[in-house]
Length: 73
Image 1 (spheres, rainbow, N blue to C red):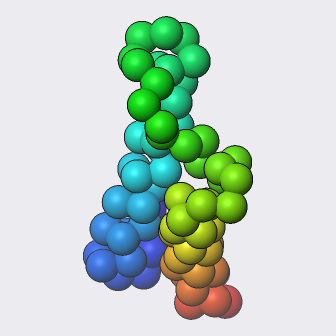
Image 2 (image 1 turned 180 degrees about the horizontal axis):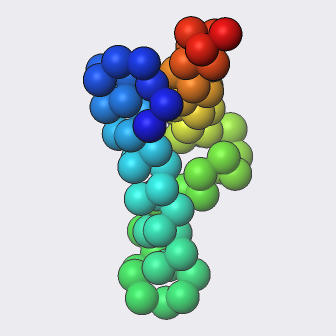
């Protein structure tokens, strides 16, 4: 929401959605509502590509928010 342009806002919201949907799916697995079929925990998978992609997404969101802070000052 703090992005200075609409493209930054859309990228940050999509990446946030992807990380949060992965967490909600995992919550459903833990509660027994969904079958466990190899989905990984966000930021806790052991070394796989999921961890790398989640970290890249997190740092992109962080970069978008930092660019907004620099623009205000």
